[in-house]
Image (tube, rainbow, N blue to C red):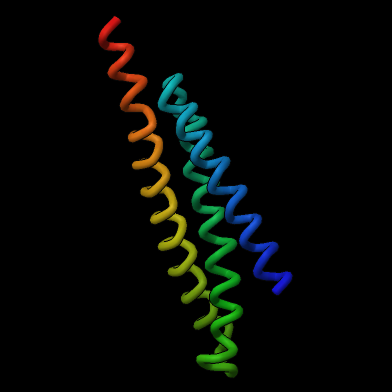
Length: 106
């Protein structure tokens, strides 16, 4: 249970930092900060993917080799990271919409 709580905390922090960095990148037009937000989303996906792989592989196939484990963890990590990035991009764009509409009225 403690492992799950630690991984959940890491994923939450990395996702939060990723959203903040993406917001800052869209506000100030800094591409490097946007890339760091994307990297935070992928890191959160990697943490979740590795945990889910190592936790689930014991139930599915306890005698799985290194190649199978690494392929499954890579696919899960990239999938989770990309979905977190897409979700945070939609969230930051929806949060930016009122600011942009107020800026265009001035």
